[in-house]
Each structure stands twice: as C-alpha cells, then as structure tokens.
Image (tube, rainbow, N blue to C red; front, side, top):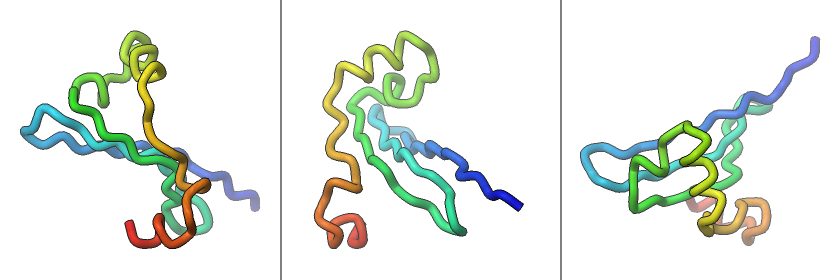
Length: 76
C-alpha cells in the first residue's frame, strides 16, 4: 500500500484584520511545517482567488523551514 503526503494550509484570522497561514504536509503520521506567513491583510492571506495568489507572490513570505537552523523549527 502506497501512502501519499497530503498538503494542508491552515490559517487563522480571528477578529483581527491580520492572518497567520501555515504551509504544511501530513506525512508519516505527523505535520511537517514548510513555511509560516503573516499577512497584515487577512483577506489577502486567506483568499483562494487567482488575484490574491498573484498579489501574495509579490510579497516576501519568509524563509522555508528546511533552510533554518534545525533548533528553530523545533522550538516553534
């Protein structure tokens, strides 16, 4: 039986105008965080439209977790 990874992108925005978005993969029984992005505009951070995606591509979203010191992602 072959098991495939599943991409999951949870986000949180609560009542604030900002949003925190995680790019993750479920693999081998756990979540692997690939990237965390913070957006001052919750609509931009959580919209799934082509226009919002194009606008997000022009923003710096921070380093990918795999490029960080191994201790940093573990502390998160």
